[in-house]
Image 1 (cartoon, rainbow, N blue to C red):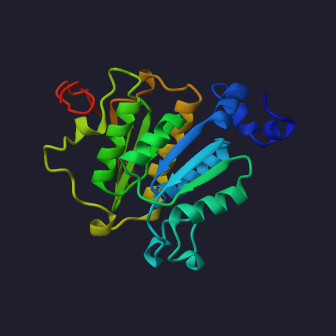
Image 2: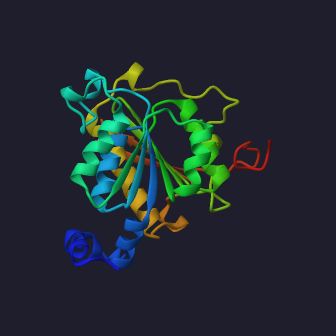
Length: 254
């Protein structure tokens, strides 16, 4: 049951028929791991804490730089040279006392994945490099934890949901097999605009809330659909994916 204060605070969410009090309780009880507290992880963590998600783990070993500030909206110049996860957790805990925010102030590795994934209901990949994406994808498939992936460069963004609980769900490795040359471009080579990151992060947060409140079905096109955003034309494109039976991560092949 929600307290009177919670009912008032989250009233606009609760009045949505597919959320209701039961959905808000589910958010309060949820534990979510956000990997990367940069341009995507900043708004994602804000939206999920504001929505009432009970526990957020923020993982990032990087420190804040001056060039981060135009898009990593939780940080300011006084935060430069400090760890991103630590600063974000400190600010979120102050702003959203209903949520328990824990910082993991190092880069996620296999050992940390194996420790945290059994504890969480959902992982959001807000990282900015391909090797971390492969690691998170593989760990989520192994632990059968849903994964919401976001990425953006320049004016373009992409978003994908992987749900290993559904045997038909493709994974990130199905889309970009490690045996092939993965996409090497990132925001450090192509640049990035903050509003593009905000749009993709908003999609990630929305998908996370739907998953946590039980509003995720294949009919919602959450799995096996790659969503691509073109910020110049303001257009979305959706591409249907299929689970690859020869995938060495999710297809049973090794």
